[in-house]
Length: 345
Image 1 (tube, rainbow, N blue to C red):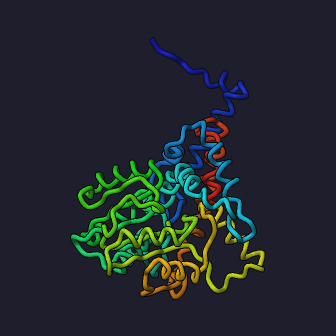
Image 2 (cartoon, rainbow, N blue to C red; image 1 turned 30 degrees about the vertical axis):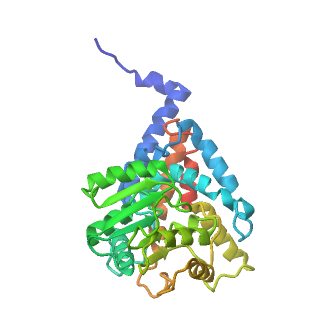
Image 3 (tube, one colour; image 1 turned 120 degrees about the vertical axis):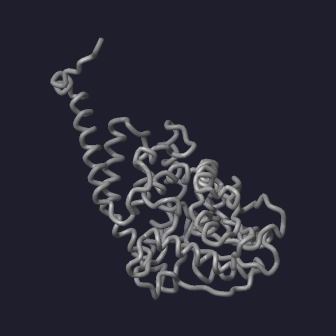
């Protein structure tokens, strides 16, 4: 017993022809993206990017709508008094965006300056090991990754130093992804992760031989609260390193172009605001830290971190079209294109 499909009759139907042409278009775009994605390449299947974390597929559009409403910036002033609800919406953000991040950039949700002749992936690992060196991580020591995502940095650091890393993330979906990847890499004995808020650390005082944050502290609505929590769980005399989005002395709050750029960064990355260098130095001092070193990682390098954004632009626009087509054909949850458009900012 068999079944024969008459394609001509399908094509006579408006819905049928839309599905056929749409599917062909999706396939063509995916092949083009695979061939011309550039240095950032493809880390996972595009179809995995439609998982949307722990959100039910019917919750995706509502999630992106509430996110956009909350993170609308107030002309360079952040989200105002709404900032104290930031953790809830950061959790929503990472449900929506985690799989897209893994698809486009891999398991390390940050950028890094590149040396000439160095690949994107090589620059990321080198930068993570530089941070490990700053906190003087050695074999047998245990450090905290505050805001660890799916654990890309922790695995690179554990593997490169022989040290032990415990991560904390507010997002439960990232916990399951991190545990799976730790096991896959054979690093479960060196890497662990807990779900929770880094604003209320679930660890005893003096638990860690150091700590680092990589593009994570910028999510905190009150940076002093975070720094005090980190200071509390670190052993005396150990080191903390933070790599964050910050404004430099060149930023002019009265320049509309500057304000627009900063607002777009904040809205696209779930930041309550973008702080200045003096703000975070002052907060660190107030929390009890002594500043050992600070630098602007965009200066004095062969290839600045933002070059990766430019080389990936063509591939990103193809993915945007792809998510639009898949939404229209109901092959992906309604609203999925929204998180990807956040990345295009």
